[in-house]
Image (cartoon, rainbow, N blue to C red):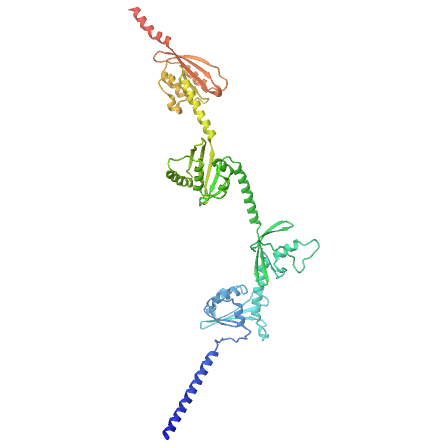
Length: 523
């Protein structure tokens, strides 16, 4: 019986201990759950105090935290210096010396209203900064005026920035009324007011809600008294309101106008050029061409407007027989590659003789940014004139070669321009081989060396180089072989001179036989 009581008592005692232990654990868990990270400063503390360890913020009062923007607390020191630096001149050097001095006190700038003091203390590696107003200690229970002054200073700085901003800014309500504007907006609003009317509230709207079909803001013109002003409108929704910015675009409009006028002038110039012009970009797509290109290449304007590649243009020209026909297509394709490479280096220039009888001069030149420009010029008439001129020269040469007399024609400057084969046989040299050295001076020297002494060659030199009217004259010289040569000097048009040489065969033979016959008679 006693054992049963002992067992029952043990069970009750065990249950009691379990309950008590559970209550203790539950109480500890609840106390830990309700524990919050504490602060060294009271939540309703009116002071503005910062506590730093180095540059890391350890703690601060609510008003002090209001001065700091959200961010990493390890960089709170630099953010605080950026905020307080404009209020306290020379703050940086004073704070740098704080670990040595232990304490410091600095007053705010004269333009800070109300004036504020900044007190600093450094102890055992911690830095405590406190903003103090001159009457703060007498107004306990009121918000810290140091924090208010700092915020007012920031607001004043922002207002100054907005007021002096050259950008036109304003804010519109949901219905479109202007509820705020900066000085740039107000200046233009005053200028556009009628004569005796003053600026009043609500402010007038300077810009209409100009947008394109996609809802994007567009460029708009504001007609001022001093002339038109162009602006790019930017609208930024902000809840039910809209922030509006008008960026000056006068310079951009002037540049675009100048570029447009230049392109129109350039287009008109290109349109009047008889030379076909084709400009290809870096990707070898046709970007610009003139009407002459379509006329010279026989390519349809629709095809050129579609911006074909360089290879496509040349393929189309080949299909219309507007390029020299190659022996095989593969070599022609390789030639296209060489054409592009040489044109990119500024070396390409060829003359194309087309199957239709035309002759084109094709020039390729590099342009900035990897572009290429090709010029096609029809030189068929020029080539025809050149061929005709060459044919006339050949015909004239054949004519004087058929003449029995030796002929030499000199230009106004005394340069030999033409001679015949009879001349080469008579004087035993062909001056046409070295026309650059065949002047009247060098030829007279040659004639003098191969003839008897005479002053005729000096007269010949003077006659050829004489300017103005000249009179034809004749003369005779005797060659070293005894032949007597009749020389005739005739002026030609343009200051040219014709000189002919005709050997007198009978007198030359008589001159040779006369000594022989006299010798026989004496014998």
